[in-house]
Length: 310
Ligand code: CP
Image (cartoon, rainbow, N blue to C red):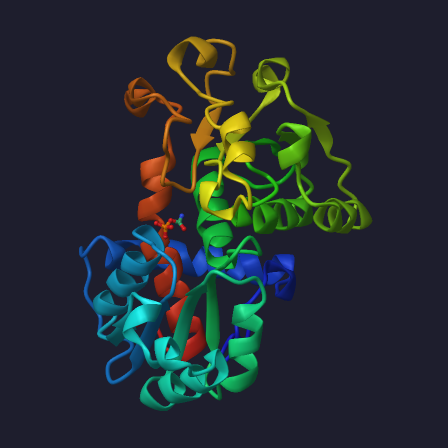
């Protein structure tokens, strides 16, 4: 499987076999991600971490993955601290960062920014979230977590809940799960349903998702309940946000309707979608999910930059 020097912009750029290869490699990275084993597989390489939108998990797990592999990191966390604030274009900024590192990880508020960056960078670019577009590395760690918990990805009954319109993680995830024959249920009010472009894409690939606004009607059939935050920052009109804020909330009473081995996932951060009482239940996988960003991103960095496990 050849990932060397490759851009990671969209989950559509992967085949099912490529995803499985990366998940297997992530499994091998686990003892390095926990620090039980050490290996400077990327000694001498430099990662450029550009985060032009807030992030805790994606930014720090990329940094942790790089550090564990002996790869140095240069980073920017605020657009206002770069020369973009003086009028420089994203294309020129990318050309510059490209000259200082071997791989660029980019989070940006605008959909399509990672694709543009990949065009102007000689070195590979990883999309770490582009506006309401997609978040392919989140999808890889989501799939890794599902496989870890359920044993297989094939034919899972997955319920996606919340902001399916602006939530980029569910866009990439719905497309990836379709490659594994998932049955998808899309739970959202009409105003926050999955964009037609994505629904049509997964239908073309053989998935026929069920749409509903009522989580109570479908929770008992779920193998995986994947809930997302309402993306307040993407709403053009704050009054529209207020109409849907707090619409879905998982608590222990609701989980009594679920199968005993159903897992609850969330890309985080959560606001009020999951009651803290759920954290200690067997269903809760969201903190493990966030940790899994480290082995999965280690696998990606090694695959793209040519790091070889002993
Ligand atoms: N899941 C995720 O992308 O989290 P951050 O915004 O904290 O990176």
